[in-house]
Image (cartoon, rainbow, N blue to C red; front, side, top):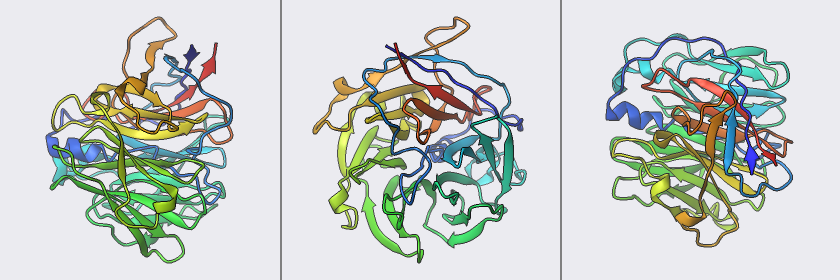
Length: 364
């Protein structure tokens, strides 16, 4: 058995609008995910901590604050700071939002003392995915324009990196070799999604891997790279995890369905299924947004089924049991830690969530 302890420490934000329409719900899966990478001294921790996580099937939740932010989506860690994307999707008019957003920002939460900082993002950017490197560089993608900006170590200025990967960018990660930024690009209108490799030195596309559509289409949401170089990609409309083998990363059209199951699928059409994905102790951990669940599965399995998924039962330290996460989105393992995961609850359409959770997985 294992337990998870969550800490939160984020600034206050605006309140949410009421339940959004399907178009906005689709975009919120863009809340992908600890879409953080393992490369170029990648510091988001998605490469997983050391040690071994066996059947982690219970979780004890401990929120430390009730502060919220404007629909957080994903998180990346570098140099001891967790950078959280504030999407403000509840204000994006094309997706049924309520009006003009506040200035866009990243919120940096110190994992050491809970203090935070901010970095401004371009106007009309509506950010979603983020990737970080251990040397302090950040990449942030836009849902509204498909653009990607770069923020260098020690800087608070967002510089243009890629003008557009139409129609929008979602989760992303830096390759192990530090040369490629892997990006989920998805279209909520026609239900198509792809993994696109972008050369970090030039900004040019080096590979494209479309995801095979399910009956409900395909939404490329988040990804993580394992130590062998393979990419593991979540697809939120059909409830699937794709794999791109390391040896095929630069060969177009190499994404293959690795696991498909009802536990990963959205509860109803128009909702979001599997979203954020990370590696911890050699195990893949995923969250399912509109089920409020945290699951794990062994990536060493050649042909896994739903029976291989392990759902963690969630409870609070104050005694509340059988709880659910509030629209979990991005997740990532804490770098150099054997037992910690960060989880973002975007809380879109609800009165809860909108916070960053720190999860310590402890063997008992």
